[in-house]
Image 1: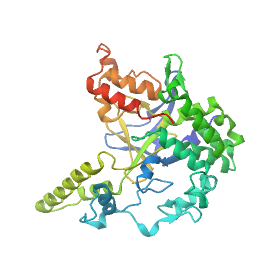
Image 2: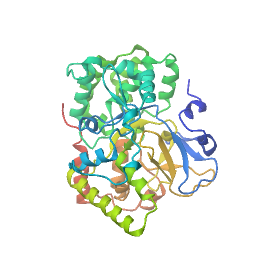
Image 3: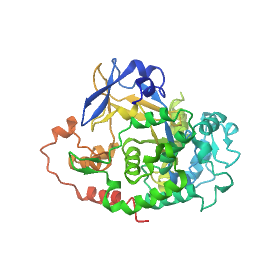
Image 4: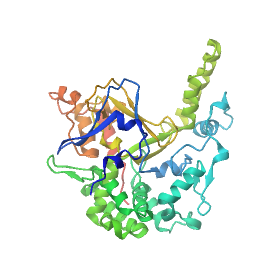
Length: 406
């Protein structure tokens, strides 16, 4: 039985029900999200919590401290700036603009996993953490969950795009639930095709190249988490479907206490000279961080969002997801005016990828999302040659090397 529309909106704030509606488009595209009223550029269309979310494994290993439930950055803006710049002497002006409250942070008393608040600790424990809590085995490399995480890290190097622990939390949510069918119905709403047979496309992480890796990972997944109620997820085909579900539906999440502090600074009303001085401090800080850390600024992870997952892709999107609350609460923001009845589209590509050739955009979308884009931009470039520049070929080679043999 499919989840009802009430279930789809269950993780959203109330205005979502008035702003959007879900419609079936066709068998190829499936569902889409459409405006139920006029939406102006800059409006928050809706806010939504994920069913499950998880920090990326390498991101956590490199000491990007985040709440284990909502991914809120646990560092103060100053602590964040010092670590990213590798300069312990950084002192930020206007420290009162930092919203991180260390005094509210909590730890699981059994495994010492950190949370931003008692509310997140309780929410995690009630939904999935009882199954996943490692207790005194947190640093034991032979524990099945630790073996699973280590195998994943050895397969999927930064830049990360998915997390095996997102799948683990899906299983754990079913294991712990009193109403297991309700959770399974929610997860069944997500597309989990491993291939697009019509277009003869296979997800890049499910091809023959990675068959041995996936078999190894599945065996570890079974050892750590097997649950009879979702036994199909542990079969070879079911695990591939679960993998495809996360790969094609997972929404990247980025949080940063430093970024929040910078936005708060931008909103200050200051005399011209003070504004100039503050901007100079911030500009220099980001230059120092770029030299030391590069592009990896945020606590990063991914989540599954019921309503957001209904948004189809366009290379000229009229909406985008953001995380201004420094946690996993997704804000869908209109980047163009949207008329009633118009489809709300986001981009599955970042701004740099969208500027690449039609051929390169299609290659990325085919391998990661199993479709050929027919948005207005792609149609307007349909006569362009199917060629990739030298720079783009180098980027493609780097993407293909993201996963290596176990």
